[in-house]
Image (cartoon, rainbow, N blue to C red; front, side, top):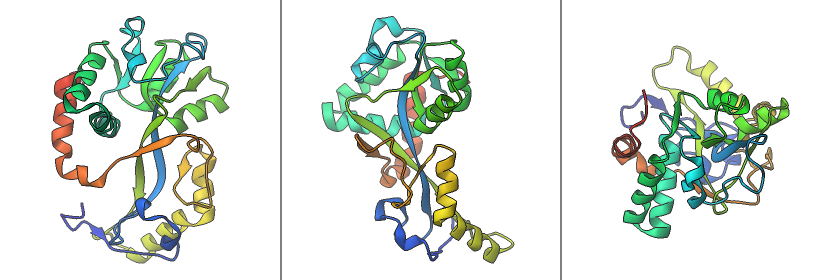
Length: 236
C-alpha cells in the first residue's frame, strides 16, 4: 500500500512513545497490538504434560488428523519457516513443514472458529492460534490452553494507518491518535490483546523469545504464500 501511495504519512502526538520495531520509520503506520502465534489444546483431551512443547512434538503420529489449522496462516508460516531455516538450515526447515503437512490438518477458516471448535472437542490441537484468542476463551471458562514451542513465539504486528484517499483526514488523524493513546491501548488490552505501547503491557509474552515478522519479507510474500499452499495444500 505504501508503494501504491495509498497511505498518508502521519506521526501524531503519541507516535514517539512506540519503539522503532513497532512503527514505520517514515511515519506510514504504527503497530496497535501483537499477534502471537502458538499451539493450543483442549485441556479435557490433552494434559499439560502431553501438550506440544517443541516443533518436533507436532510431528508425533498420535496427532495425525487431530491438528487444526487456519487455511491462510501466512504470517505464522513465514516467521516459523525463517526461524527453522536459521536454526536447522533451509532444506531441513522445508522438510519439517512437509512432515507437518503430512499430519493431515483439520482445515478451518478463522482462528475464532478454530478456538470454538477445539473447545467443543472437535479436535484436540490447533497448530497456530493467537494468544489473545485462547486467553479470551479461557476467561469465558472454555477448556483451552496454549503452549510454546522450543521457547520461541512467532509474532506479527497489527497496525494502524491513515489512507491517502480518505474524505476526512483530520477526523482520521484524531481517531489514529486515540488508538495510540493510553486509553486507546487500554481498550485494546481489555479485549485480551497484546498492545505495542510500552506503558500498557500484557504479561503473556514476557518469559519467551519473540520471533518478529520481518518487513523485508513483504517483497517476497507472494512466494511464501505459494510455497505454503504447495506444501500444505489447504482446503478452500
